[in-house]
Image (cartoon, rainbow over the protein chains, first blue to last red):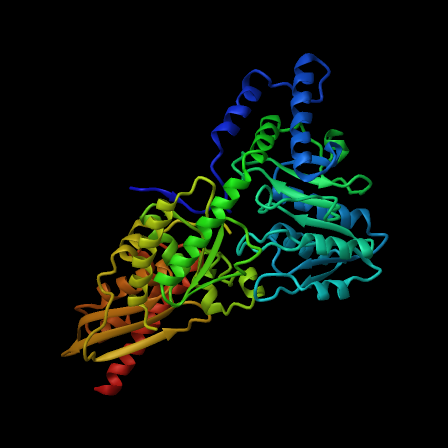
Length: 380
Length: 125
């Protein structure tokens, strides 16, 4: 059976080049970067080289990048780290209604500790309301955390505009750039970023490694104690194979790949909406990640579509309530004003640079058949 | 979100729901659920001499909802109306080899649809 993996926002295949770059660091170059001997030095050199590669992609200094265990950890270190470091200055944090749970749940837990959180609304196209953000900032505001690209609907926020607002009010600005990294250019200086979170496994790197940009001068409360690694911000022996693989992965996606993905995305959107009636795209078709397509199919249940596509060798995901333990519609889809009945029929397709036209044609044929089967079965 | 796995029996009914469809001139129909919350099920029964001789369904919902609909039809066919009404949601869960906890409520949908269809049948009789 043909296999088509269209869940690249969940995770990606490790690229051959990435795996190859990592292997020596499991067997030959296995030193601990904190040690003084030659093994340690070799490890340290590779770690610092990896740090520089990632820093360069962001127009950041190498001493402004710390390695973490992934995107969720980076978000935790950033949001909690600022909240605890600046709690004497203020207790107000601003975020948005459609952040990833690694920011949203952190904010909710901070709320219980006495912090006050403002959740900025999202318009129907999937963009935060900048006016609302401006108005929300008070002299107690210590952090603005707004994601760069949304994981469910792929819309890209204007982080430079947000950065400008934060700069005017002298507020720390963090962005969760896990989905956008390498697909959208990021310049930490131009966008006035104080903190930004990244993850390797979304970009054909390994799982279990991420990074956090911490602008020079930004003070964070350290969350993981036990050693002075990572500029004394994150204790623990560094994941060297991971860091090497992450750096390699960050160099793999070219502008040509991005253009190719955007063309495939647009082709898929055009064909599916043309061939399958009562289908709508969630989120704007402009300022959208080159690899994200989120559709709501009327009168079908997302989970049923996911399982039927899986039977045909196609991997997708759904933010439909039915696949979550909570049975609530996705907070992202609710934030853009989607009615629950449309949320139930939402399916996300996320392509990669390895996706082909043929993969998408196979998916469209399967999808057409599946949607019409389920609609025939529906009482509506 | 933590994913779960369906039993083979659920997947069998989901992949090939033999009882999906409608009955022309049914003895009773019952529609339950609503789209805002999730699933909708419509059940059609044909009763001859107090025996349910045929049952079909239309369901908009997840794999569990479709499987419960299909298995309910299997179970009630050949039973008297009174016998059918004794079927509980737990019976259906057992036949399907269990369902993940968040999906248990889907079994109630099927049982409710049956009760509504029987009510409709008795009213028309």
